[in-house]
Length: 155
Image (cartoon, rainbow, N blue to C red; front, side, top):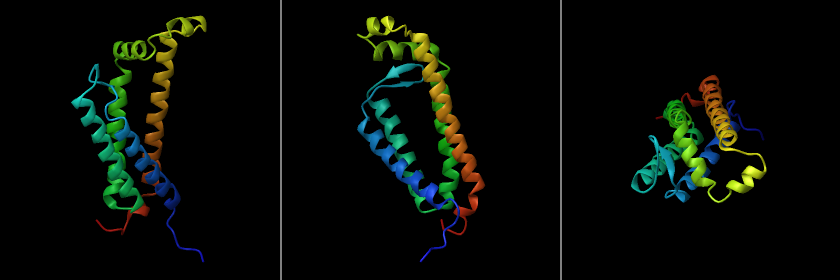
């Protein structure tokens, strides 16, 4: 017996599961330092940051799983928030350099022996961040194309 499912069902359900997994990782890393607003921060501000993302990802996961109209809109809100977060990070080269130095402290000689410098690592971080943001926008575009999936599903 084959059920009538709207196009996008598998993709949105899989994404919902991955978003809930992201909630778990956000909560596990609730005390991890994060680059925020030009500084590497820890403490309460980072806890709020991680909880904010956990709530956003959880809501989006539920909205996608249940195919709610508000889930459709939340895709674009989450994409915009994530884009702005990554943008504020990659545009601050000094912050990125400080983060790299902090994270790789003690490994300088090993990296230097391999010919890896901070500029190369910074370039990799920037490119990775850009690719991830483009993936978010690709998903947002896919959501727009499959917007019928969210119609007639209640509040």
